[in-house]
Image 1 (spheres, rainbow over the protein chains, first blue to last red):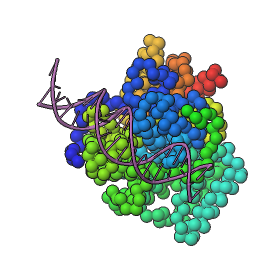
Image 2 (cartoon, protein in one colour):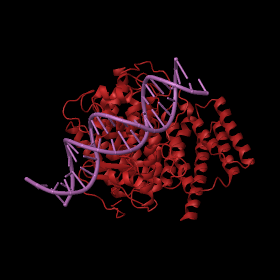
Image 3 (cartoon, each protein chain N blue to C red):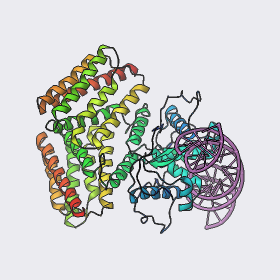
Image 4 (spheres, protein in one colour):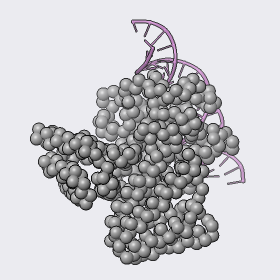
Length: 267
Length: 267
DNA sequence: TTCTATTTGTACGTATGTATA
DNA sequence: TTATACATACGTACAAATAGA
């Protein structure tokens, strides 16, 4: 290993990283210099998925077929597929084949987790866990207002069921992080917005992972957590918009207080 | 190419895609079967960045050095680095070296753009442009309330300057998408939340890219757009929380109306 | 400017591990 | 269990790009 520490910025003239420009070079085009073979293959595969309207799980050509069809080496094909795999745009199953991926928010989770863990020597522009929490809070406080009117009684019953299970787990002394996640995802399902639950789930997962790496203990006051969630359900059932938002805000105050306390304990 | 259309779900027993588990297998550990060499290298490189506290732009070991240090082939190293490059965790410069990346939200932009473009045959769970717009709207309506109290007069002047430049561009018949982006990013800079401007910028970019691919025309009523932004600045200057949120809501009503209109035009 | 060393990009061949049928 | 298809990994060679002498 050369290049020890000394985080010196390189000259950095061209921040090139040309990702997916889609129709930037013609449809499946070969007109006018394809810059990097590997990047070109990435675009070709994505364009192939779009053109054939393939859904998640649909089979993609094998590596050998892509080699022949695009006239490139196996190495280039594999590097391109690895990059698309990291974006969850394709899914590679060893010994079986390559398939269209879910295009989930897994890359966001990975990236945010990495950035949050890397900011210990906190400098400008660094990402703190509090930033993620604040975004979650703003989102959920705004979303709960829009969901009060559309939540059905059946959905409210399901929410209350989750709270009940939380209570049971709390009495048994068992942590219930998954129930918390389920509660928040369930609440916004009726919005019919496919992005909302995934985005909230992504932030939630980042929080949990970072907390895990930092060795934070499990919820020290599960009874309080249960009560906060029950308050939310009560306000939702009463169709009380302001009350619901307030209950959500209180819930997040608790989360933030805990995070701040743990940070003090470590720092 | 075999495997034509027929988007049939495969058996799909194991949804394996083991990404970055961080300390899942010991620190830099090799204890107990490292499943995939390439994935293992990804984790090693990330752990190296964390351990050495390297900042964005810092040089990483060359491919040859990684080969020697980890005892793997160059192909495996390259595949791992390609995956990390897709996540913007490393930056590869041809003929020069590999560096720590910005860990930006580029992967999110790519993924959301891809998903939105792929959902033309709209089925369940598909991601629509309206979903992204709604998240932006909820975020900005909540954020503007929190920013009213902390915005300095200098920042308000800068915001008004952007609106003025919008007005000039509009009079000259020049579209001003970048000024719109600048306005929204500038507004939340004083929050000190590193995630907020990047997340909003990501959603904004996805919207613009999808609109571009779909061939939507530029803003047909730039004067209205300018007025909406000016209304926001006026409310902010008056420290009018409710008015600011209302102005932001009106702004988004306009965007949604335009998107709906364009969608009807195509569909 | 030209040359050179370093480093990444692409290609080919071969062997092995893995999952499906 | 066997056979087949496919991804995984390694090694080598050469091409292309960059920085610096």
